[in-house]
Length: 505
Ligand SMILES: [Zn+2]
Image: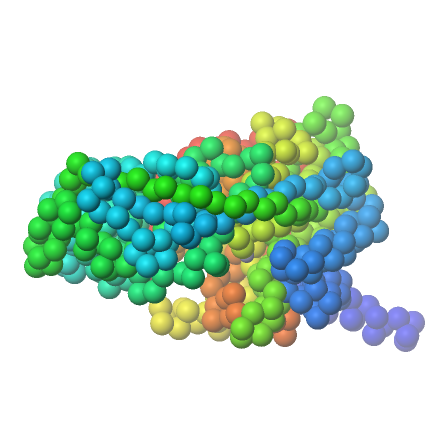
């Protein structure tokens, strides 16, 4: 008896540590799995993923593949079935890298009066060789404080738009661009302001999933111009108000065509996602799935040291594995299938999850929800905005969901009663900044779990010692319960697109 007491006390302490004051006990039928999501296991998994063996899980040097091997082994160990290619856990795909041949690339006007030199006047990431279509161009002079509402911004639709000053020095214009009204009026326009320095052409590459380039993907990627090149264009088109740079806002949209002639060389690289499945226990609901996804790649070695990515996104992957394990340990199994995805190449353009939606394990119209875990282990800290870590020890953003499925949000809110996190509205719509984008675009009810920004984002300081374990475990338990409900209730959350509404303060 005496010997058992400390053990019992320890178990209670562990439990208390992962449930915030006021949280209700979890539903009895999900309790075993819920309790299996605890700190020691989390530390094992996250410690391995963000530790020295995988050196920050870069997809470009073999480190990602070894981390993928670890995740696959862990899935196998806990009894999650493989859902990759050929009966394995890996979903194989290749990426094509197109690199411009600098002395075979140039931009000129169709009347050949302007001829811009690649590497000197501009640089561009291009996908294909040949004459590439450049949309009509326009010039916007928008001084700080200008009344943008008076400008004929509709005329910018679909154009390449040159701005008179650096965008980051023109806060009014930036605010306008991200506002619902600005977004509506500036559809499809691409904006350019003079680059301080051009990227070294040898470092340019345009990456896309071989055989699955995004349909809307332009053949021309990141492009930048020098101030001199923009001036040459403005002079050639007679954009006089733009060149004057006076205090009055102006828009000039000349009938002027540019042509980009490019030659590229292409190479192909092989990559993997890790995908596992827990088949549904109900034969009628088994063909449908809940997908839980987290990107496993990060940035690896860099100039400032190894970027281990403990928060970004070893935390999301550890939570994903803990949820899988919780479901396997729990005697009551989900009625729908649950797919566990560990995506590659998120940091370089959301490529792994894009490949998954092109080749899903369960058809997308049978995918009832996508739950994305990306950075779920820290306390938001943005001192300049007055947002401090000490006020965010329990908080999390259930991002994206309110722009696409209030049904899904209701399930999340209800299940939060059992953990007691503080659910906050994000001040920015980050749907396109994580793998959520690919599922959201396919009309699947989508959630982006995110604990917020901090000073170590994409830096060597994103390390294991800064993880808030109680929060990370609470999030894993919350998503575990929500996924259990999503996978077992008869109806499905509806996808209904709504505008993003930033919180009041
Ligand atoms: Zn991330």
